[in-house]
Length: 298
Ligand SMILES: [Zn+2]
Image (spheres, helix red, strand yellow):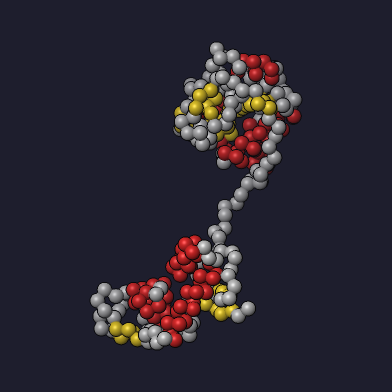
């Protein structure tokens, strides 16, 4: 495969122009760059200008556009004419115009095959990505106690509660009572069983008067999770329940792009301060650490 070394910089207008044409004409980017190079080579062979007289309104970039069809080639003219400052030209000045192919490239060089298209294009290195945590088993039980979020994608926090009772079925029954006027998105039993009462994209009624990081009405933008626990500071949160909570929080953080720092307890957000104590006795710092680990962030 014949190769020729050309100046190709992905930040360059030539690349953007080639990308535009490749998209428009359904061609590979390498094929279009090859076509561009052949056009320039033909222009030089057909007697492309070897000098240029500066005219009113000219800049080196405009001159490069006129003689090469590419304003970004102006450093070639700057170098050939030994111009320390590319804007220091005057009307009537005669500039040497070097051919495109014979001039040392001022930028790093890349080999581009001219006969076969490149099938990949450079991409920006992505931000570090999270590990995809496994989705824990979740049983849908529903609840009539919810309304629509103002924006179904406005989900940026997780609120952890405890139920102040000791039976998962009791929570399900209570949240299924329209007179209760309360709900959460999820509840987790002491054995680690996860049930879902309200869809994430809907607004459950768990936080009440509340504020987090200066934003009121945390129900508007949070997911609520209830842990079955007496909330007396004595009742333990069994490891199976905690691990189910870690898995659920990691899954929710991943699918809604929630920051681990925005997992908090009801006691952290309730207004007025001190109104709520749940989840009393639960280690929220450990939860955040283990969720971060599940997402590959620690
Ligand atoms: Zn609560």
